Amino acid sequence: MGNITGNFIGQIHLLASIAALVTGFYVLVSAKGTKRHKKIGYAYILFMVVVNLTAFMIYRLFGKFGIFHWFAVVSILTMIAGLFPLFVKNTKDYLVYHFNFMYWSVIGLYCALMAETFSRLPEIVLTDTGQPNIVFYKFVGIGTAVVMAIGIAFYIKYRPIWQKRYGD
Image (cartoon, rainbow, N blue to C red; front, top):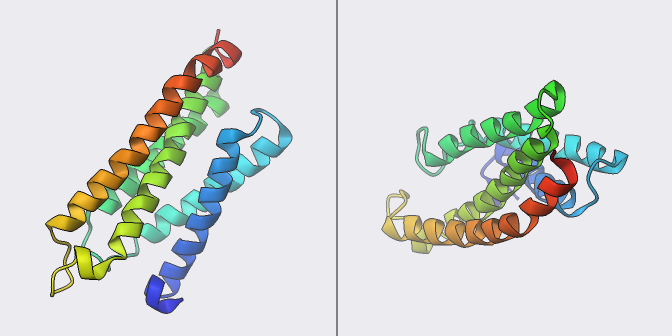
């Protein structure tokens, strides 16, 4: 597994990412507000904390703080924004805010999966020196756009249902 992940931190990152992908998918498609949803939702948050913390320790692709590190910052902010309404409950629509931000947290994770997949194609996306080339950015951009488009389509379809069920 070391050749795929690079080192121990990469292995932890990979395992936490897989667990977050599974738990995140579950909380999106399962019944909301149940004990199981809450438990698996908190597991998702725990896995995502590990994913994001380990992401800040991985510099294989750029050798420095890069775009994927900035996306980890966005991921953390999205999770905080998704959890905040649950703890504050200061509006009638606090559950809608929770669902919206947590939905985008999971979609962002699937976008990261697409980007990570393309970063594993070194013959295609890296130069001879190991740095990303223009094809890398095209693959990552197109792959992420496809995942985002699917996420937007589902969001447009289900947001009115969430609003009606959990809003005012």
